[in-house]
Length: 189
Image (cartoon, rainbow, N blue to C red):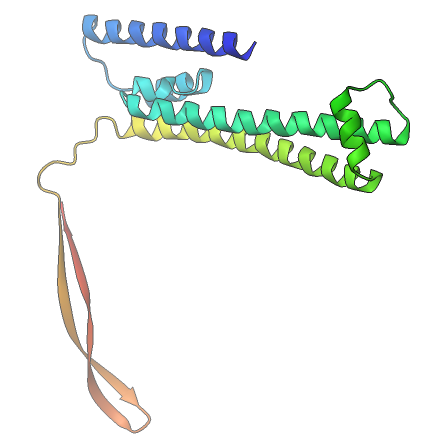
């Protein structure tokens, strides 16, 4: 099921990128629209990055989604196993697999409750992290789209110089001078 979903998503993604590439070459270049990038990335993660022509970010988006999905489903499977093991240990459910019986025989009921709750918390936290990752994908596409046509130019320079500054100060014993050392940063644009 997961394989089919990933293949279907990949086919959809490639076809949309091809349509977008054809539209760019046929139609006169329009202004880059951050709203489109946001919408594309919200509909299909990574599509906003493709719209912004930041293709190198797409594997990062999907690697994050895949990793978080794997961790969430692994913790969900373990949560279900330990929940069934606790139910078997307490006699609530005796129709379980051999793996669940071996887990139930290995731990006490209190340990099973602790482990069950731990896997549940990790599963829920993983899904929350997935939502945050999804949101970051959308934010990244939006910010990139805003800066798509931004030209830095050759006039931008940052000059770093050592600095010695003479300071006039007042101490309890009287007035005096002191030198302050530092770094001066000058930005020209």
